[in-house]
Length: 442
Image (cartoon, rainbow, N blue to C red):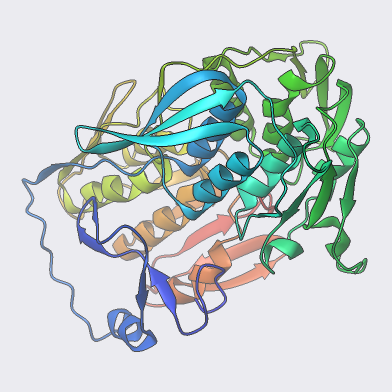
């Protein structure tokens, strides 16, 4: 935990729950090491506190992925949009501040039935180069989206914007995105120290010249590292000087569902992206100006929703998540139908809600195979649940790089040829195996 980027050595930032679905405070709480050790101690006895007849409704916070996209789309759009269930996080705050610095939009807060609503007054894609450095901290999504957005700016008191971040951000690569933008007429230079052996010269800080948008037409982008590069160009492409044809090269794009999510959201803001029927992984984006809908509701985070639903499955109780359903834009919305239902849970899923009722305790059924390529966020949850209940499981495909940080606390693991076999240290007769067909970073 000490090496987790969200923690600071002996200071561990942990989200505390007062009850199922109720977070203590508005931010993560700093917890001392000795308290963490006590909680993780093998001598702690956890008593069940959930009655078997319990029925709860849980509304997780808004999706960060959707919140960040909605923020940029509304800022680039024309008119006012009231965004409901917007996730207030460090990442979205950084994005809002940067867009304000570039005069992309005006932001205000309203309240409706006690819930905050973000009011975005977009200026139709008219940005100005920022007078101040845009410090993005550790916000990876913001850095990728704003790299392309900054090319849309017109010169103001100066003719360039500088994107920077903390030490960790200055180590995270962004070269594939920058290369694609530069070949399409953008003028971008790296301001960091050249350390070619580590590739750090292709990271923030960046000096991005205000050119009023990409030239458009053909853009080739390597999309086998991060789908956020693709989303960044797609969302800004309507403001290019000519229509854009975006070709994703280098093999199968990573995290296709996030690309589909971006395209679906662009449609909600008035711009249709056409997927080529003649060329694989190719998209045509028309020149357009986003038209802000009067209101836009952010889906609850489907990854967060998997936890209360899994608790219902394990304890034989009922849980309803009212803002994640079959029409969800997020891959993890499939968790209940594709994992919990085959294991013996009763699942009812409408377009906008999901309800899970677990079977009698101890009667969850094993599943022979789960393909987690499109539902990567709950790999840890699924493995941990199966180990605790002694259910054999094989999962395949992509697993996010956060796994090594947590696996020492839960499992013994060994990696070989991009495969990791995980076995429970206290369950000798049961074994779960995760076979990694891909070990990539989203």
